[in-house]
Length: 246
Image (cartoon, rainbow, N blue to C red; front, side, top):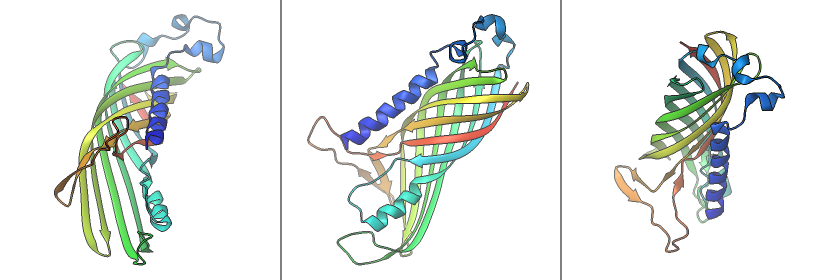
């Protein structure tokens, strides 16, 4: 458990470092020109609106499952995300903004063996909806003649609504917690105020309590003070979308 948590934290910190963009674009490109002389950041749009969608991988991976049920949940962990962002750049290279991210995934299969200890088969129908709202701090650097490297780091509340039926019996899990998000991407401007962008995003979050069919459940923590138990909501995403500048 601790190894998986440390691996996720290390990956998230890598994204956070990339989002901080500590290097100059000219150093990356090998240009021996002054950045401020070659690019007028003050002339760039102050407002940036972004709409995007892409692939999202939920890092859930529960233990002690039958191989059949594990394969079924692997399909549920892969889904689509839809995101919108509004950002304002009061400084030439820095800005603040607000994010909305929605993860959606569905799975269904008949005859799933959910336990190695029981021969019973289950007809499963699952739907996971996770919504994040958060504030973000952003930075941007020119990267190529028409390119822009954009990074962000922020956090906010996250809400999960997980519904499924097991042999026709409905179940609902609802939860709320907080998440930290790091993003790094590249925008290509094909018109001054319109760009196409791609980006990678890491969302780090864990649950320690939730409601199951209306009843509150708290995850019991182990006696070892150096370890803990939780349900991971961590995701890694690859997206593409349109950006509008005003």
